[in-house]
Image (cartoon, rainbow, N blue to C red; front, side, top):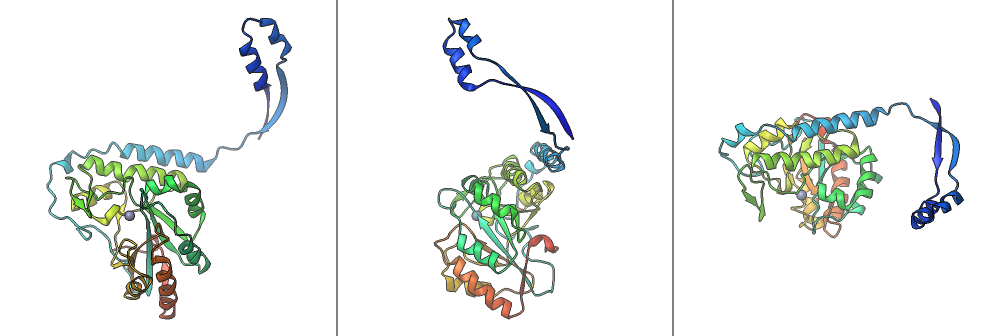
Length: 295
Ligand SMILES: [Zn+2]
């Protein structure tokens, strides 16, 4: 659709000039207002933008979730494998889901380019759990990862804290203090990721991967599944390449492996490269989480 509009163009320099010469009104006449007829293309309504606006509006509503029922309850469990947390793909097929966390923060905002380049080169699908702080530090890289069809982007929290209704800690990191803070931890990053991907993440993994079972229920009510792992792939990127390799080789059909893509100085990339080749030789292939039901 084409329409004609008349645009008045006023050069910046002339605006400045007239501002600086307030006492000499006559100088304004030295500066002609340029009127120009311009034909502009007006695009059809953009459905992507419309859909994104709707998604973000829905997420904004979720921020106001009534959490009073959760606040009256006392959690019974605290850990990585509490009730409701998914740890495996529900399949007998010889497939493995590699998941890579990008944790963000002062010590966690780097990017393991070697690792990601390897996955691309070998066409290995992977699920990336990305924290909001990492996105803020790596916006250009994140925009590129979002465009890569091999990868799906999932939610690794806003502040990267354990998910607790009562302020429990894990690995020295203090968790959320209330149901309300849990909603914030999930939804803030959910909105950030959605604004890049135009679709809502389906899965959530907290910073430290710790939860109480009430927190897991809240995440579910917000529309996401909590997903951890049954193979600890790099132990917070502290493993040597050899240890990463050996951990991955202990995978079984439907394993979900926890690894990191934010520690390029670790043994993760080399360990993954070697393990992927060996696992392929054994007949395994690699999939993303959303391709399977989880258990
Ligand atoms: Zn993390």
